[in-house]
Amino acid sequence: MRIRVLFLGLVTLGGTLAALPGIVPPAFGQAAPPSAPGQGPRIPVTTDPARVGAVPIEIAANGTVVADAVVTIRPRVDGQIEQVHVREGQMVRRGDLLFTLDTRMNRAILAQQEAQLLRDRALAARAQADAVRYQSLRGEGFAAAQRFEQAQADAASAAATVRADEALIEQTRLQIAFATVTAEVSGRLGTLPLREGTFLRLAETTALATITRMDPIFVQFAIPERWLEEVQAAMAAGSARVLVHADGDRAPPLQGSLAFVDSAVDTATGTITLKAQFANAEMRLWPGRYVQVTLIPRDEEGATSVVAAAVQSGQGGRFVYVLTPEGVARRRPVQLLRMAGDRAVIRGEVAAGEAVIIDGAQRVTDGSRAVARGASEARAQ
Image (cartoon, rainbow, N blue to C red; front, top):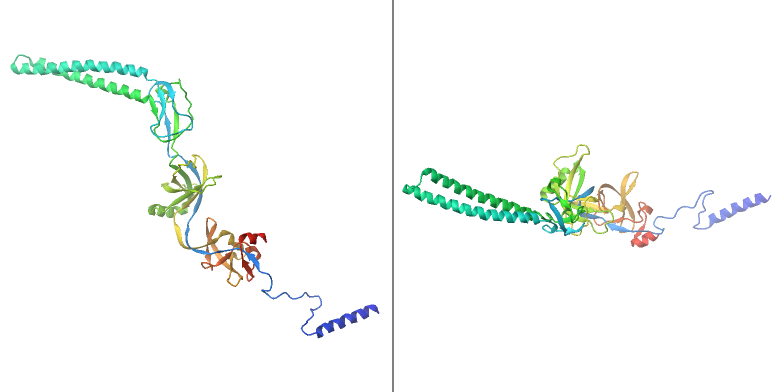
């Protein structure tokens, strides 16, 4: 009896609610209808305008720093190291004094040769005078032709002896000059394996030191062969730029110029080797170090780019959300062409200056109401 009365009461209550104006009760077992669109809260997002203009074409690669030249310093005369004027790792300039060898023996030989030269010059002068005298006597009929010819030969021989003495003296002076070892190029010294007192022999070809030229310096890297025509055109136009950055270096990337393109493609890897030259006065690049290389052959004009974080992927491909002036998010399909730093070069229905949603794009859908505000506030949501 109680159950029947309760059921009749519910029926009566439903009829009463239906009789009230403006109230339509929901069907039994169904949820209430959703709110009308546009009445909910706006989603905070961060936007950045799409840009249309020149965007550099960037070719990324890994490279190795290589020195322009590595010169090995070797002795050119026998001798004992008398003094070392530099220290290991020191920066030197071309012509700086590195080592001094003992020259006492060569100086003694030089003094002997100079004395020999004085004697031979005196003998040559006497022989020349005899030749002149016999020539005059022959003209008067007092000297035989054979004696005159002998005097001429003696004079020529004495002159040749003088020239030989002069050549020996020049050779000895050169050996004395070689005892003073100077830097052949500007650069950084390596290890110095020999110290003062070490006796050097020319036949042993012992290395005194090595000098590595550090400024300018080169970076060698390889790129896929599909970029060869682009690189050749950039070399011809002189527009190629190369940026390098080493791990741990917080300074901006160094910019250099493309200096070398190999004459053949490596068939095993399908790549071609290039070299770029950089000014290295601050010694940021070190030979043998691995670096990240960005080759920029040219700038592409009229390219549309957005912040890379704005590009999303879905079942239908890549897309971005654009915030209209009315505050509505609209989905625009795009095609990702390439990356240029922190921006993505795209092709699609995005016009220059349109507000592309960056932060908050994962929380909006096509038609959602959104509001643009500061990036820090949007991330705090």
